[in-house]
Every structure is written in C-alpha cells, then in structure tokens.
Amino acid sequence: MIPFSILDLSQVVEGGTVEESFRNTALMAQAAERAGYHRYWLAEHHGMPAVASSATAVLIGHVGHATSRIRIGSGGIMLPNHSPLVIAEQFGTLAALFPGRVELGLGRAPGTDMRTARALRRDLEAGANSFPNDILELQRLFGAGDDGQVMAMPGIGSNVPLWLLGSSLYSAHLAAALGLPYAFASHFAPDALMDAIAIYRERFQPSAQLDRPYVMAGVMGVVADTDEEAKHHFTSAQLQFINLRRNTRGYFPLPVRNMDEHWTEAERYNVEHTLQYAIVGSPRTAERDLSEFIRVTAIDELIISMPIADLDARLKSIELFAGLETIVRKAA
Image (cartoon, rainbow, N blue to C red; front, side, top):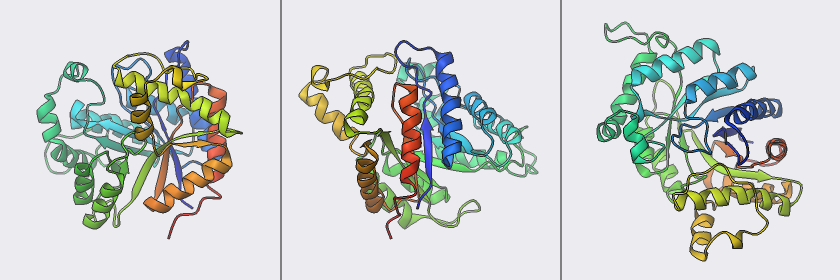
C-alpha cells in the first residue's frame, strides 16, 4: 500500500464565499485526518476568484489548528514570488506552532498570470533563475544558523522538510541533484510524468534529508456511489479548465448535466488530455483506474485534488477514496 494525501486550493464555489471556503477547508482536513490520509497540502495561486489559498502559510495555520496529527504544508509555495527569508520565517513559525507536522513544497512557476506576478514585486526573471540558490538559502535558514549570516527567527534550527514540485524535466533534474522528495503535478500536466520520474530516480543524489528517491504524483479524484454521479460532479473541473483556456476568471463552477453544451470538440480533446489521469467513478471503477496508475508509475505516494463543488459530495469522496488505500497495492 502507498500513502494517500490531499491537495486543496480552498475553492470558492459559484454562489459561495471565501469565508465558506475556509470553513470547508477545515472540514476537509478533519475528514482527511479521520480517514487516515498522510498529508494535507495547500497550493499558492493568485488572482483567481475560484482559489482562496493565496496566503498559503496563513491557511496552513488554519488547517493546523483544525487538526491534530495529519502532516500539513504547501503544495506548493511559488518561491520566485518571495524572499527565502520571509518563507523561512513563515514556515519556521508554523513549525513552532505544529511541531513535527509542517513541510514546505516549493514550485518555480508564479502561480498566476504575468500581470499579477509583477504585482507581487519580485523580479520575475531573476526569481526563476535564482530558484536553485533560493532553495539552498532556505535550507541554510532552516539550519543551525551559526554562520554569522542573516538569520530567520522563527525558522532557525527548525529543519523544515523541503519538497520540490514540478511539471517538467527541469524540476526532475533539480530534485535529483538536491536529493529532495519530488512531487509531480500530473493532475494537470501529464505529458512529462514518466520521463520526469525516470530522470529523478536515475540521477538522484542522497542528501542529509533523503537517502533514496521518493516520488509523489497528483491526480484529480472524484469518487461517488456510481460512475454517473462521479462524472456529473467532475464536470465542475472540466468547466474550470475550459474557463482557464478561455482566460475567463470566475468562481469554481457548479456541475452541469451535459458537457457537450459547454465545450467545442477541440476544447473537449484538450481538457480530456490534460485530465487524463483523473480518477473518476464508483469505488470499483476508481480502484481499477488507480491500480493501473500506480502500477505504471510505481510511485511512493499519491496526492489527490478533489474538484467537487458540493461539500457533502467532496467529503464523501474523501471517505470513499480512502477506502481504496486498503485495496490498491503498490506495483513491484
């Protein structure tokens, strides 16, 4: 068996509010903890009405107070948007509030459009190019701090575990070189998954944090009593990806009865390709598809994004998906 984890964007559903999305995030985290999930991560995005997790460290603290055992962290913090010192202080604070539970997943993309990225007030080109050095700086700031340089307080001595997130071969090379655990965003960027995993495993260099490769991959997950019900809920995710392609900003869509009324044939092809690894269906269907995904990738851990508008259906999907963990076996 492999661990299951949850990735949350604190979605703001059509007709809902940010306050409701934060309450729902706490309820989801509590449900994930009860069901035995390993981690609960939140993702940094900006300028998107459907996503309320922009102040990611603050929201991780909210989840930490709502739970007691499950590991909490970012999936991820987009480091080019920030000073490493500020992130070290934020996550050092979280580590002091929730000892032994906090981890920091890092990404290189801005997590938004370029106009919003510029408004975050960092040099975009310099931020992306300095990404490897910024990771090393974070490791130093989380370390013993006896070198007479700038100190993160809180943060010093916390040794917050780092993860590298990615959707490309660049991230695979970097995670391997730095000896960090690697999380691939196959839930929305499937094309480089297999090559990235192979490169990471082949080129991995042991580090103080990790002595052997560790791969986590993402999937969209919607499990319901029947295939039809799950597919109906999944139309929300399909609509959201169409809106992103059309550059239409809006709240997380409510599900629809017939997607053919909402997308062109080209859009259908594009969305189905992008979401090809989604696990959508009854427990029996989900077990079959998930078993194949794990067999092919031989991943060490699975992280699931639950793009479901209705809270009760989302909580039920968390419960039903957790039931698959006792059935699905890791491929040899």
